[in-house]
Image (cartoon, one colour):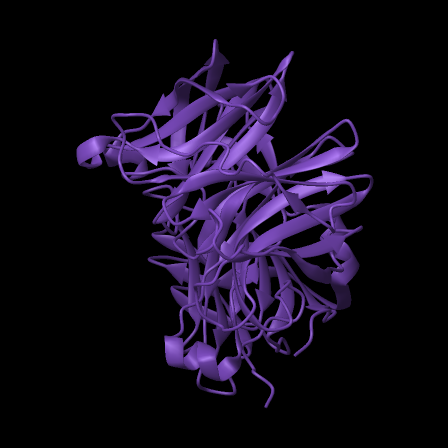
Length: 437
């Protein structure tokens, strides 16, 4: 039976479970390795799945890249990590279970992998840190290689990003913390760390409950944050980046399900790869997010509206219907309590998912978004059955999951709270399906 909630233009494996993506770009191809349970649509039995794309739109699932080795240091799971290239060899770093030890595998073609005979290459965490010790990320810096491993300070004081150094990618020496977090800002541990330069600053990503970004300065192996905020809500998780041939920093995340274990077992699949998000450093030092232009290739039939007025409440768009859509709305500046969209709603506007910006609190959902009083809201939304990804003014994102039980929840409504709002324009495109139903 076809699952009406399975997305059609977001990547999902053919069946069963996926979570954390591990992006890598090489020779014109975008690679996404990902946490994968090939035997069930539930978490566990972690392998590295593998998918590739040349255009960021069409994804091909390849054979599983890494599997647990019976009796080996990863016998209970091959967990998240990163991939780098050096001298025509590819190096995959990952956390092996049990014990959260760091392991290495190498490849000449990104398809066939050989595990390092000396695994684990890092067998224990430094003294003084908590249980979390996983998800290595590696980069080249001047004449050496560096690795950051996500960890935690004792007594839930905050996350810890532990910095290692290597001359040969095989032997690693602990240096010191790249960053110590504050539990009041970014929760108590740093899962899935990602650290990279952007626009003259450095960016540190981590996950715990939400994905968090921090921008700041990097000097002598230490990162000093200047701005901190959530990257999205709790459905967007374990986000990591790649750097492509156009010089772009592209972010991918795992979109978590909102269904029960029984419902996932019945569906036979669980977990979705987010659309790519192009990162930019804004003038104020914060992080910006926008969908890359390649996604325009998915557009089909187009509808356009302009000069609309929305009184306090909902305005359902006439003639717009579907659950595989792209929507772009330009709102004029306002000081009402809330503006935005209700998507996947019924014909009367009921039972939809609201995507609202509050100009008074300057928040888009749970994400801060400070707009100038002269700026209107530009809301860009991708609807793909149970997946909703929205971008606001290129500076804030919200990913949501929805599983309507009413078959007529296929409509879109403009929203105004506490006053009247003028809408400059609305554009709606039907999107071309790519993934199997």
